[in-house]
Length: 262
Image 1 (spheres, rainbow, N blue to C red):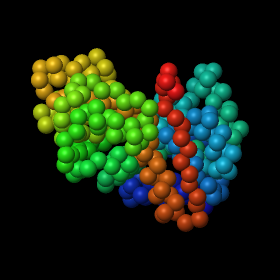
Image 2 (cartoon, helix red, strand yellow):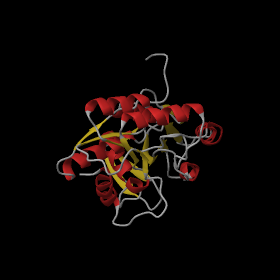
Image 3 (cartoon, rainbow, N blue to C red):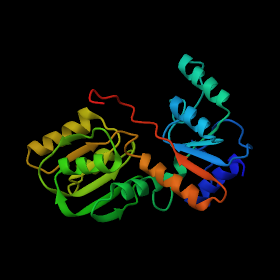
């Protein structure tokens, strides 16, 4: 199966429609290349490209940009140029898979996050992009929630802003870096909000002040990769299950931060 045919299959997992303008496009390589092995990751980092090539992948599917801007527009900047040369020499075909999984009937990235976080509660889907709400059956403190996520997803360190040790039952998930996070955090019913990245001086300080005024209000920052990668792991499983003759493997790109205790 050719690279572009595999991507058409992936797009069809989400919808029968096709975007006229989308970041989900080829970033490198020949889309006509025959493919038997598909590597999947959050980012096309240098180590991921090396590992995918060594495994024998012909196609690498990533969720986020390769060249540091949303539409992967090229420039002559030194680091970008060296990375582009490195990728071209690898021979890999690279595609981004972002808009389509987020626009599925149920957000595919959120599906993976919910599956692997494995909270005991009911999930409420919403009409808001990338927003899910989890109603826990048994209250947990935000510190316990963060510890649960770290253990389930292998994230090194979650950051907690605001309430940490009072029991909560209402969790909102807005994974990655979506819009509308502040509005959801301000929502009266929201006690804990999970997200990938956030503005500390706005959202963090709001959660801290709300807690000091006696409200259950917590922002848990998971890191962008930690907040979405299990969605791409789910997509890896879907490729193996739904596309005959194709072998897919997830390649860990690692969190972008380095910690003193690692």
